[in-house]
Image 1 (cartoon, rainbow, N blue to C red):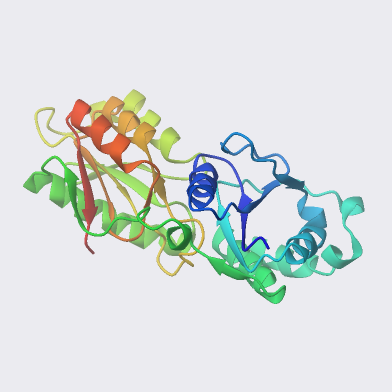
Image 2: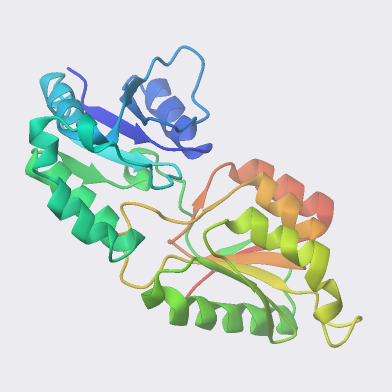
Length: 275
C-alpha cells in the first residue's frame, strides 16, 4: 500500500520530500502536473497528469491506497483545454474557476477541499520531513541593530501586503523598501536589487539591507510556504545584502547546511525571526 502521494510542481522541494520519504522506507507515489519539471531523485517515475483530468488522477491515487497528500513545488496556472475535461473533472470547474478568480490562496484552499472530498488528508511538507521548518534563532552571523530594524520593517510590509495576495518577501535597507516579491519570484526580486537598487540606499556606508520572507497572513500553511535555499543566499550576496531573515516556523529551508556554508562564505547572517 502506498501511504503518501506527492503532487509536484517545479523546483527542488518535491525532490527533497521524495528523497527523504524514500530514505525512510516510505517512497511516495509522485504525480507531476503537465508542464512542470521538478528536480526528482533518480529512478522516480512520476505519474503525469493534466488539470483537466484531475478526477482521474485522484481516483488512481485512491486505488493505490494513498491516505495523505503533500503538495509541493511552484506552479503557474496552466492553460486549460475545454475539450480535454473528463466528465467528473468538469463538475469541479465551477468551484475551481470561482476560487482562481479570487487569487492563489483561494485557489489552493479549493484544491485542498477537493482532495479532502476524495478522502485524502492533506499535510504540510514539514509533517513528512521534520526539520525543514526551523524554529526561532540565528543560524549564522550577527544581525546589527540596523539590520534588526530593517527586518522588522520588511516584516510589517509583507504582513500588510498579505491580504492582496501579491507575494511573500521584501527587501528593506535603511528603512526603505527596495523591492517586493511578486509573480516572478524571489530570484527576480534579488536580481532587481543587484542590478538597479544598490544606489537607492541613502547612506552608502550604512546598513546594506535584509531579505525577509514570511507566509501571507491567514494562508493555509500546509501549502505554498515560502522556501529558501543556498541559491537564495548567493543571490542575496550578489544583491549586496547583509543577511536573510524569515518568520520562524513559517519558511522551508531546502538545505540548511549548504545555506549556512554559503552564508558564512559570503559574510551574511541567517535569522529565523520570532514574530
